[in-house]
Length: 84
Image (tube, rainbow, N blue to C red):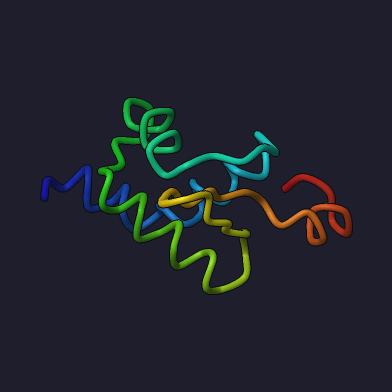
């Protein structure tokens, strides 16, 4: 992993959380990867793992639609504190 990718992976949780809160709509991991790949240099494996970790921590929500997982910002936190 290059130094730039290692730094991007370290801050991936903040990047992904901010992105989902700002966009305020559901995304698959592939959509998030495609939208953030050029700007932040995040790899697909990093995006998938980080989204799953954020969902387990309760910072974002996750739903299954068939075989695909959809991720979105937790609306209850967003209503309390507003967009971050």
